[in-house]
Amino acid sequence: MRRSLLLGTLLACALAAAPAADAATKYAIRGRGFGHGVGMSQYGAYGLARHGASYRDILAHYYRGTQLSSAGSATIRVLLQQGRSKVLFTGASEASGHALDPDKTYYVRKAGLATYELRTSSGKKVETYSRPVEVSGDLGAVTLLGRALNGVTNGRYRGTIEIQEATFGGLVAVNAVRLDDYVQGVVPGEMPASWAPEALKAQAVAARTYALATDAGGALFDQYPDTRSQVYRGVGAEQPSANAAVRATAGEVLRYRGRIAVTYFFSTSGGETEDVQNVFYGSQPQPYLTSVDDPYDDISPKHTWRIVLTRDQLQARLGSLVKGSYRRVTVVKRGASPRIVQADVIGTRGRTRVTGATLRARLGLDDTWAYFASTTTKVRRPATGPRLNGNGGATAVRSFLARLAAALTRRPSVLYGSVSPRPARWRVIVERRGARGWRTLRRVRTTRTGAYAVKVRAAGLYRVRANGFAGPVVRVP
Image (cartoon, rainbow, N blue to C red; front, side, top):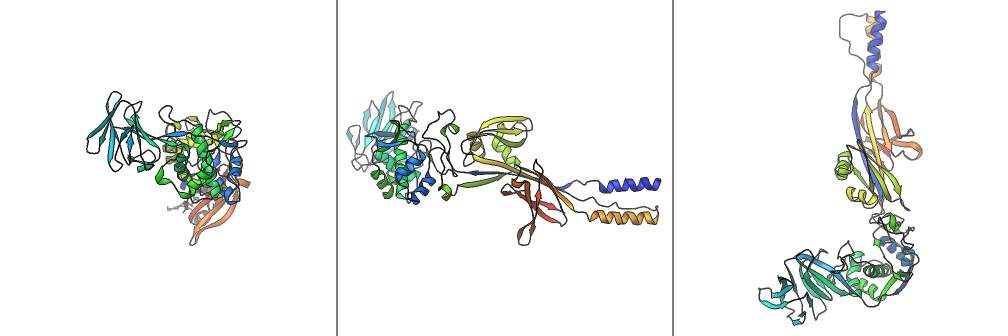
């Protein structure tokens, strides 16, 4: 009786599971596209042009139901500098009716209530004005000294530079420029000038139309010179091929039922664009800004992408959106394309409903077309036989226990964990690191919840591949 009790106790101890030798979780976000996803995909337009589409075909594809028409004459006012104590320039021949030397440098500063002073670079006063100062040059462009909001330092700009006090203090410099001159400075800032001519023409029309359809600054200005509106870099950015595209489409804009269309555009669609209301929340659906297939966008380096993060990185990037400790992101609603419209950030203390745009901004994603995946891998070491130290016990019992311990020691380790979402065909690939890299050992079926377990005998480094990415590396002792 005592012998049976002793054997049973020792056997139970030997079979008890040991603590995990190694465990880790790896999080991946797979996605497509770069940009907001509404309107014309620039890489898609380039792909269409390379396959023989004209700029009219390209525009008709992305902006369904629109018609080309003439814009007439127009002036676009672009904010270049703001919050300055003084605005410096050179290359000007006139400042609000006062003749200047184009070879000299001047500056305008605020002199008092509704009063501006024009001075030379040495500080000599040239003129006093009771209204905003308009600066222009006979050579067709004025050089605005210093860094502008578009990142250009000492840039040259056609038209005039308007200098006045901003609503919240400081001086602003606004470039008032003819519409097509403005578009010449936009096209090469938004699309490589080396691209196909028909793509450049499509970009010219889209940029021209967008400039007329939107107003970013009210009475003070119309457009920012950066991605808040369109990238505009003035004369220094102009390229012969882009200027040719502007001339070839001179004055052309898109209208929908007679009204100027809001021609959003962006870099890369990932294969499909999105309905406007699913990206710019609160916008009304527009028949010409609906999801369309983008068959030739795959030439973009951002057609597909993936980032891998740790739990700590996710926690840090999501910040206050995580209640407690990060667990996962669950998509609640997707758009006409797979772009995320709404999702829940789930923590140990609850969940937070967020928009796709918020997720993209917090996590630094290229697009809201994203899928969240995770792989957890753990190692359970085999139970080992008991070490028998002592003076008593029959020889047969000690011999049996020694053989039992040796047998148990040779049992395989268990590689186990879970993948989310459950992989295609419910299978994960188990890989082991060898002298020549990672080698596939087997494919293992998961449960409905994505859990898996597999026995491995050899010591070494292992990982599990599922959902298009490799999980964490763990060591089997």
